[in-house]
Image (cartoon, rainbow, N blue to C red; front, side, top):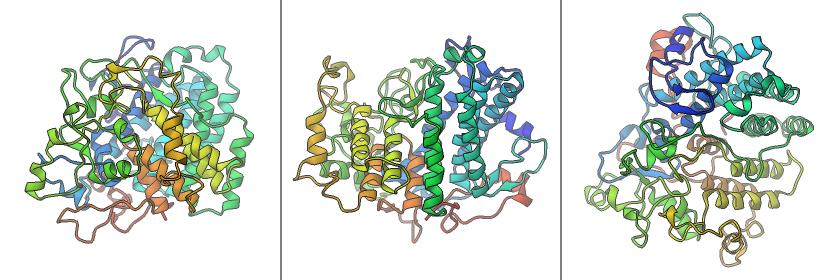
Length: 514
């Protein structure tokens, strides 16, 4: 996995007609290599971040493992995903796409450093922490210190050492952004497709990623040490992403081939307006969880059968092989996963770290005693933001955004939320009625993240052993459980064999896992 190899893998590219107006395509001859400048590299990298967390190859199995989605009855079983028997041939895109993003970000950082562009350099360090943390979260030991060198074989650094380094990178990033001269980085307003050059929001994003990494460490570092780490974030004064402050990218997505918003084009409709995903459907477990607890977010995560109101919402049992059951749960008989709260529009921004996730992170940190504040208030703010972000109650018909209520911004969600959070008859989400406050926060975050970032939920599940997600019913599962990590790609065992360990995904955990 030498440097030139990584450059060849950097084919998430975008066609460029100036950073004001990006067109997205998959032209492998239009690489983002060393001829590019930071203002041209940044939009590519930002698009790749959004695409990474929802790309079908990776998002599919995490959404299935985490209980959100299942295979529609018209398809044969997938023994790797449903039997949890993964090998080095499984999920290789997570490795290649991750390093593709990271090499391009590394090249941008080099150019930004040589040109004295502290804004771009600070952003690159946040992206580095965001991307490398996910590599560790999936594989544990990965190339880091030697990742972008000319060496033919690369050392794999320990996950805990990489995390320590990434936390330093994030601290440095904040200092760079806080001291950035606006004039020298003025073009960021046009070329930054996440925050439009608003470095105050980039600082919040960096702090939120930093908090996320610190919470990963709750099982491996003393609480006092973790609190000191959080105190350092608070001391920089930038804060965290709050209400209405999602990190999301939009390089002018539109209804054209390979130019749609990534989630919309992968899980809802193609350019021709037809349903594009006939495989993934709502899981029986998750649909029942929400309906049984009067949680209306199922109308935002999924669509009614046939994409028409009145026919109901139907889920599928994960791993089911019975033919009679499958015949009754084919694609046109079960709920589409590109619900109106997720696949909002073909030209909508692609989320990277939504506002409600930041609020849930803060609520957890407060509840654990790592951050000052009112845990109940932050928890309820997070749940409220989830409903708002998903636009629950905004439309007369959940499946048809053309039925928009013009007074939605004036219309209060209070009745829906009051019923959900405080109705004494429905205690599922009620703070005062739940004894285990931490599990309440984690459960509500789990629900809110359906289809949004299943990799993040997979991380939460492994560090908390919660919630209790039902296992696949597939006959090949045997005693297997949800894998604790991924296996290195076969290319690493052939090209970097001396440094690549043999791992057992059923027993070998990443360093921070419980």
